[in-house]
Image (cartoon, rainbow, N blue to C red):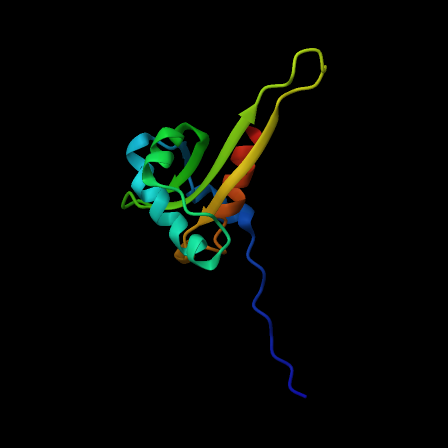
Length: 118
């Protein structure tokens, strides 16, 4: 039996500052749809038309590469609490995608922290 060394785990905390997060804009709709396509093809996400991404752009947080392409996105839809329940609102996190070229670099962790802090 041969033992192989495993690569050292990368610290996402050290990588995350290179991933600024912003709210998506309607003009990001085509890029959001494009970023989602590999996940649609794998069956992990359902396909959404570009018009739906444009209509719900404010639901999304994105990270952007220096060249302007999107590195990742995550949607958060907030549902207000029912009157008299005494609880806060509910939320649904959806369409959480990180571009293949950026996976393992802290983009997903950065987006998750941002959406949970929102």
